[in-house]
Image 1 (cartoon, rainbow, N blue to C red):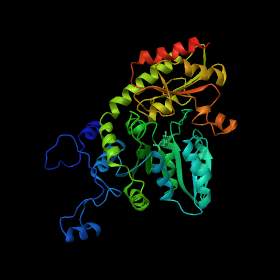
Image 2: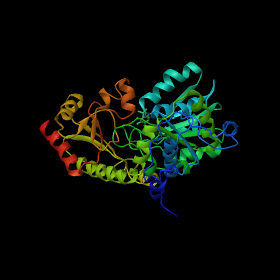
Image 3: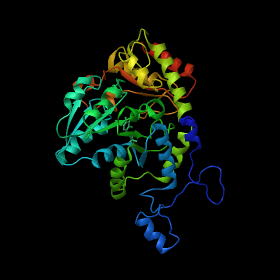
Length: 390
Ligand SMILES: *Cc1c(COP(=O)(O)O)cnc(C)c1O
């Protein structure tokens, strides 16, 4: 059988009569019917066919199919952004009185949904520490509808035990298990095989990989995807065909890019570990990581993010970032270009000090998204910035 990456590269929307090699961009809002009878049959679900790009489009379908191959999923849906995908995964499934169990260290906007938006609709949540298996089990209540997590976490790079948490599905068959698999990508981590029902991604990050377009995707069990399809059809957060065309092309190189992101990130983590000007280096595939064995069990490689703490707190962290010569400062991640972020003053600045510590964010914490440049150039830029800001 062909390997996933070969299948992804070979997946393509049906060729048109023009016999193009590369898939065209289907910038069309609607699709014509050959006859009144065909229009009736398609609307009645008696015949398959595209209707309107809010529902489906050849470019978005091609992209979704590739993510389904990567995650070994039955079905999927594409969204205008990662947050549209995360929001729909909850909003389409919960009702008033439901409860969500989630890992504490989650993407900032997802935290805002749990704390600011869903309470207005009578949906409550309980946070647990992702690393604490017993806490997951204890947090599930009678009215729990969804168990949600991110692993590895941002920016602390802590892992949830996917086999354990996914295994709770057997005891709680009515609870829906959802993972935001954005940091690992389908190439490094396949959560559905552990019992998770849905895997959500911000395609904006590694799937695009070049900082160009926003996108989101959800894949998993077809019965749940059908519920989400109803929601997306009638609320409209669909992915643009243009973004889908870009993202589908990007999926062809996801594996080879992730191999490079991961090998350079590991080399950087090894180079920084024990450096005089650094207090702590976190990387899942570094043997000193407290969950190294779990990481090597559930991930193919450690991912493209390295988190470390420079000595001297926020003041030093600012000087360090300003001293970087090649590496850019922006809040995005998963790009061909290496990116440094100071989570404490940007992505996670709205949190209290206690919340920051819970997520592993200290004043000197730097999150490095390791790009595709030569690894020596990345390491050398960081070392020179550490040396010149002593
Ligand atoms: C970026 C990100 C999101 C949100 O995705 P957008 O495409 O920016 O809307 C959600 N989850 C994680 C883990 C992310 O990194």
